[in-house]
Image (cartoon, rainbow, N blue to C red; front, side):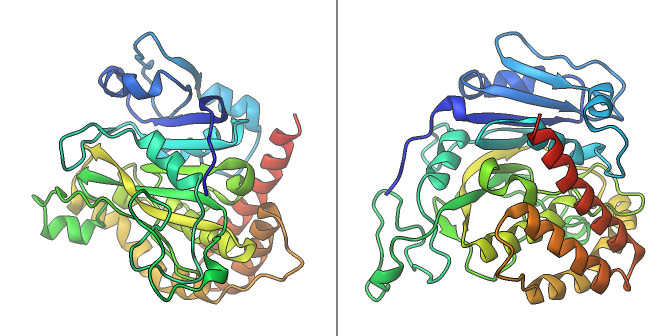
Length: 345
């Protein structure tokens, strides 16, 4: 079971953290030229953006963010600027790719179309209630294995596709520091559904999702003090991923991970990152048990209300642990308010 997704239903969202995007867009030209592209310029970036011609795109700058959002406690700087793209899009589907990524190749050296592969994940059901040992049974050449309950084979709607990347892995700074030269060269041609009530470290580097079903749950809430711009210094997408998974589990929606891959060139000084990341490493020991224990009332039936309910629980339960969680709860409330306001325009 699958359905066709038109190109007109998709927005590409790019968080621009560097000014010269020429090589990035040229590398993606064969793929991105088919779609509308939302480019969010990091509010802290001073230089003008350089984008080659031939792309249907709209750039949002610091002044645009201020005029659209107004006064807000949400920090849209650095990688979090991508969330503005999620907010202003009106399309059903969003593909988010970092500006240090390029299309990868599969094990046979053939170029990968990550947009098409994300859409394949999102257009076929997910199976979170019973694990299929051949992974995604809806991929060509696969099916349900012997013993898989027939009553569960219709699956549920897949609303989130978490892609992977080759070359630079998304390690935390301690792992990066002890493996400074390690590169991910292993391409695994597989997709699997993340099981019910299992959390995952979601990354915004290479992501596809159904904005209409899930958009309000992709919330830029948790920002650490002194958080930097490199991937292993940030926490906003890790927190967002756990919020999203709780929402999906509660609403009976599915999450897939695996292909598509992109090739990633990003990096940074792991020892410098470690100074800023240590706070997040410690906080994770409180965050994960909280999300494992979250149970939302059956009366909560929308992504917006799920986020508001979690915000209340975060404030009451985690707010006593660290003030940063109170700020996260405030951002979650503010995000839902902004989503409703922007959506009604």
